[in-house]
Amino acid sequence: MGAALVAMVAELTIGRPDAAPHEQSLRELRDGAVARLDLLQRLAEQDAAAYEAVVTARRLPRESDEQRAVRGAELGRAMVAAAEVPLRTAEVAVE
Image (cartoon, rainbow, N blue to C red; front, side):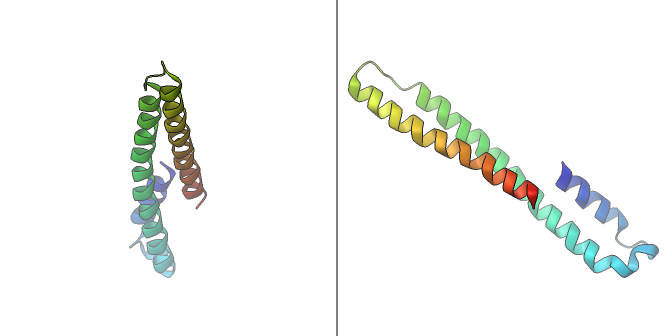
């Protein structure tokens, strides 16, 4: 939401006579915000997919030792991936 707001304000300011001395900076700011917005939207989709992988791993059978081992390994991988997406999202938000 922050990236969208920054992009909107920059877009509304570009072309105004009193902002003319800052036109290039405003364009760079807008373009950077739009790029971050696009990336954050993709990360939101990746986060949903990562969560689904965790749910799927939790549903794996666990009656035998072998099944529990497979489930544990899959769940571990899914949990690591599910943690990486929010971390990347936070990094982009800081940008």
